[in-house]
Length: 444
Image (cartoon, rainbow, N blue to C red; front, side, top):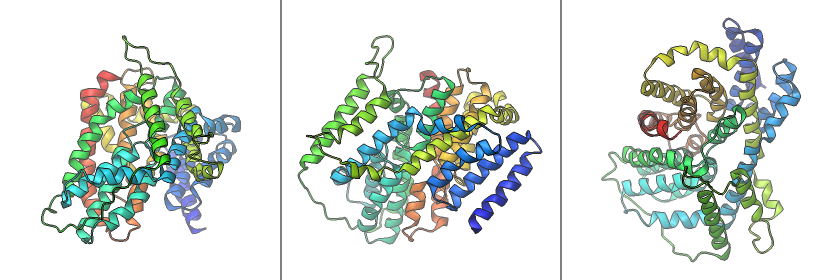
């Protein structure tokens, strides 16, 4: 009850302060959003419960009608994520992730920096298609077991957590902010990048970060002793081979579905349907990789979290709060584009350190869309920078689920994470904003 009381107190204070600058309805909306963010942060109530509160609170305070809130919890983009969850559950059930991890670990040299690079890359690649929370949970035991050296252990765990956040932006399904962006673009009528277009845009960021982040973590570790986990070469099981074929077929379809204008129109298939169909295929006779009992492992609280994010974004639009905040940030429009992108990336990245990146993204997207106006050619670029920067927070445990998970190992001090994370934050901001200015603005 103390945590709920604290959340209410902070929300009342925030809403009261906001009333000095915004209309009563807008101030109430900000107060409710503050309440949700604080309760998401301090675990005052279960994540799924807090995420369902907009259905009750928004109509109760006259912000939006009930019939306008509930459809946000069943947007088509959510079913894309459900399909992704099914594939993730099958990968865990078949232990395909361990096969991938073991094979990648053997590629890298048996040195401190080699292991740091290996774990970072394994974490990033797996997190591009699976939940970064799940991947961090799966890889943390490997990181704890791979060496007895306490200093190296800390760097390996940080590499796992940071790699999960870095790799999550590689695909549209890699992390919740990506899906929030796709849902928001659908709502405001802008064309979202296709699956492979997204990967083409984010690959330079991910690759550069995977070169620099482990290098930073490996600094000063040259002479550290290494004890490597025993390597086992096991043949792939029948189920693992089935799943690899399905994943390969899905990847091929997504590739063929991508239009290359003006030469190739693509297959014209709906990517949300493709992901959901791939997930449902796992239950079919002859495939039998999942049964209905396995579906209970789908994290429905995350689906509710998406619904809350979409509801917040819609409310920011319907109450014109996004326009009001954007008006107060209008000075950004007078800056050169490269500096605007840098300021946005910096502000979002460091704001994410103290709150959920999902919650922040749901709030920031409608605000950033109004900086230039929804129909302005730079708007999609700004929204992409906002979304990617929201995942690149490396300083504090509260910033991302992977950071919080590795802190649970009790061998990492907050000071260590903050010191190394601050430098990697700055590197991430620079890479995202420069890539957006040099590459994305010509693609979008």
